[in-house]
Amino acid sequence: MISASSGCFLLATPLLTGSWFQDKVIFLAEHSEQNSFGLAINHTARIPIDEVFSGFRSKERKPFRFFFGGPVQEDMIQVLETGRTQFKDSPEIHHGVWLRTLGDEEPVPILDLFAEPTTRIVLGYSGWAAGQLESEIDRGCWEIVHPDPAEILSRSRDELIASPADFKRLFALS
Image (cartoon, rainbow, N blue to C red; front, side, top):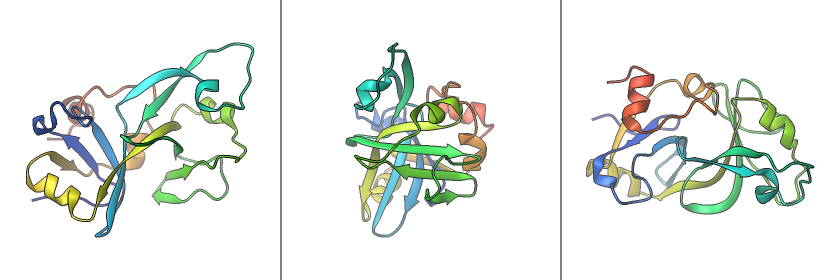
């Protein structure tokens, strides 16, 4: 059996039908014996920037694509970047992949972030306590795949992945 590790992807199986995780593809950013933390990369909506970043003012309310990372702390804003980062102190969580959780009062280069087509602004996250994810994997709730995260996440955020089957087809995974 393939085991989960930081940097892998979790593909929801039909056992998760009816849950928030139905048809989700999760990038597992962190996995340890204590907990696991991931972001759904195929659940999006177009939302005006000022509805997410309250201090942002613009003449037009053009909606931008935001990602819903999971059902936990949906008001938490994270920036997932590939290739390079807009923030000097963002941790590189995998080769060529940076993740930053934005603070409440932190200055954010909003338009620069949206100018980069591979940057994903993620609301919320998916989290598991010690042993919880392993239990779900053992029950067959998740299929684990290990493609290169930088390769997967370097695709434009507008090239949407509809489902785990779509993810496998796009990236030639069996």
